[in-house]
Length: 161
Image (cartoon, rainbow, N blue to C red; front, side, top):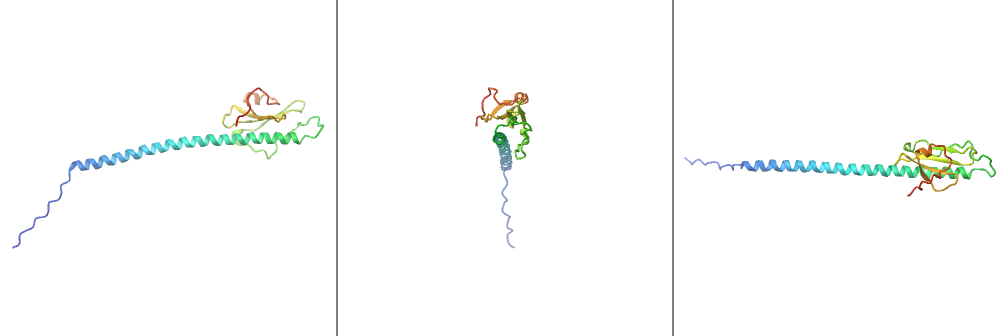
C-alpha cells in the first residue's frame, strides 16, 4: 500500500489584505468623484467665458451695423434736400441679434438730424448710438435712447474696443 499523500496546505488569506483592497477601492472612488467635480467646475467657468465672448461679438456686430446704416443714410441724402431723413426706414439688410432688441430711430422735428440706438447684449442698460454727424459710435443710457434725442452727444464716453 502506498502512503497517502497529503494535499498541500492552501495559503490562508490574511484578513487585513481584504481591508487594504477595500480601502484602495474607496480611495479610487473618492479620487474619481473629486476629479469629476473639478472638471465640472472648469467646464462651467469655460462656458461662462464663452457666453461673455459671444455677447461681446454680438455687440461688435450691432455697433458695426449701426455705423453702416448711418453711413448709408448720410451718403444717400440728395444735395439740397430740405428734410433729408424724413420717413427713414431701417433697411432690410440691417440685421441685429435678439439681445439687441429693435433699433430705435429718432429723427429731429426738422428731419435734418437722426440717431439710431441699439441695445447692448453685454450691458442691456446701455445702448449703442450713431448719428448723422458720423462721429464714433457712443454708448448712452436706456433713458437717453428712449428720450427721442436725435444726436448721440450726451457727454458719455465713446465705446472703447
